Length: 320
Image 1 (cartoon, helix red, strand yellow):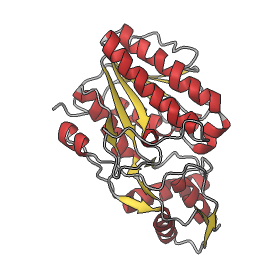
Image 2 (image 1 turned 180 degrees about the vertical axis):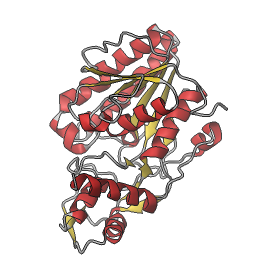
Image 3 (image 1 turned 45 degrees about the vertical axis):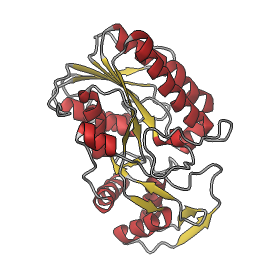
Image 4 (image 1 turned 60 degrees about the horizontal axis):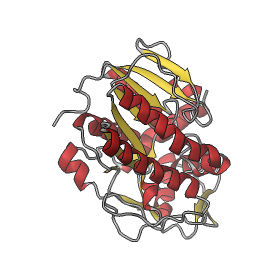
């Protein structure tokens, strides 16, 4: 097996590269010696996420909507397609944009990779499993998704992206891989993006009540962003087609997560229960047997350590 970082990429294109995960991926690729072109329309990505990369040798920023085209001049040998609104607050605000990015944007990214014989990696999501009836979820599970529910614009865009990537591979021989990311968290998340970790951290640091939806016993599996990035690069380097789950198999309830954040921040916040969103999954946990066996990958950062780093980052941001 080829180690993720030891494989030498000359030029990587990262769509959605100014987003949360994308910006960390751009930095990791630059650190490994690759030139990186970040493509982002800044509908949800932020210039601050890549400000530290702007002056680094080999980094190029292209502002573009991938659904309209990907105007990259230098041919890449790796295309990582992460562009998409990913938080409920964003994809509910931008439903048609989300679907265009998952369909037309994925097609354009695939055509870019295929045209220059580059390796292509689609960043899919655990949301393709919906509210799962199999637990934990392995890659053979087809999912339980409501195709007309409020979350469908994101869920179905990603499911379509997987189908399109598979069709492109089988019809055109494109060297493509699908990774399914589970509940990634860490520095550079936006405090108001609607996801549990940044919401709880923001509320705790402000001394506000932590808003837990439903009874708080629904579970998630939290994967620190550095681990997620290692997993994506491992899948890119390996040459597998996937899909492959990239996530942390350790579950935590939302109530326990809220209590952990309160403890780590030293906040005096109370917990307030609010209405649970429609189609909110009751459980979410990856079976990572395939990633362990094929990629030699598994997460290294514990929830407590990852949350400490995330809290420190939010504190530093608040001090600016």
